[in-house]
Length: 434
Ligand code: URA
Image (cartoon, rainbow, N blue to C red; front, side, top):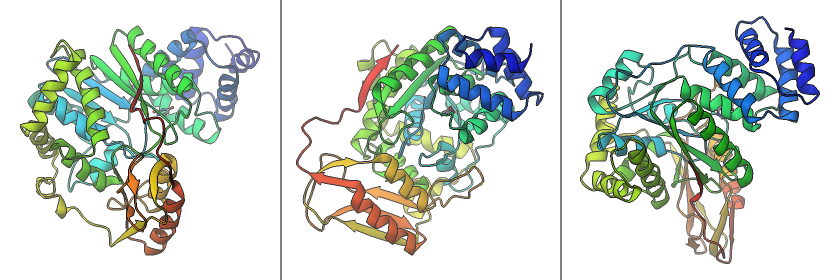
């Protein structure tokens, strides 16, 4: 077999066989096939697409390219959750403790934020001493003891994805359904949880800007999961405006704490309840989502979910003083109010633009090497459909750089679109795929 022939076949619109896909994945992982040939193949895949069978072969080859994490010594039906990424998406920090408080093991290997979207690991690391690089043994032991563990992906799983993703990032071949699905699902399948719940975001702050494409991505990932014998479901959720009100690492942790106490933003809690009730059904803890919702609400109202978060922090060496008293989290030097120059209903808050503002303040990273400012970010005081008076505060900018803060203030004034009330309600859940 020759990589040249594989590139040519894909270029000419043929589908690739299992053997051809394994050949290029193995050759690339081992360093025997150079970047320039894989870059060319990726572009051919991007332009001519892959069918479901090829996508499945690609995912399998990527899973097999590295180590697998065996979680079978964790008791119970283990749930893993993945979000395709968004702005202000601190759902993992809320959902994990909620379902763990209901005796369902929540196992999650997370990633870091890149570009305008945040990452769970960075958020957790804004808690003093919180350790995300725990061993596989600790990950398993903690989950057996307290039903929850969240750690960084081990470096040895899906090495093929690591190389491919870096190459896709610089060759304009990221946003292809087969390439995204295989990348996400290979990482999920290399870890043997029992149930996988996928939150596919759509809208201005998401990878997928188009609902049809997002549904297609969700369907493709659910098919891959099922093909592996995993209970997999996906929900397609709105990421047109940021989720919750906080954007930025320790600001989102504080918001997650409030939400676990039942006092957070409605949309964040609602999404956690929806994903949570589906998780409890997947884990066979309850029969129906309605029942699941009741159990989860009880976990919030009784303080069990919040206490579970405290346990998670303790077991991963974090300082619980900050959790118990969130005022102790480091605060940015400047808090700048963004006051409205107009009056009316908020019609739109472009999530990607808000994410980019947070990035500019230092809350996110441009490249994997960027050091981030854990206290920087934005708190939205108004969201879509809220009414704003002249001079009332739209948002608060938390920054250690006054000049950048003032620039972001002008940008936020442009990002908020104010006018007459939206005719259509903003739906949080746009589709469900089983
Ligand atoms: N997240 C991933 O892990 N991979 C992709 O290709 C896109 C988003």
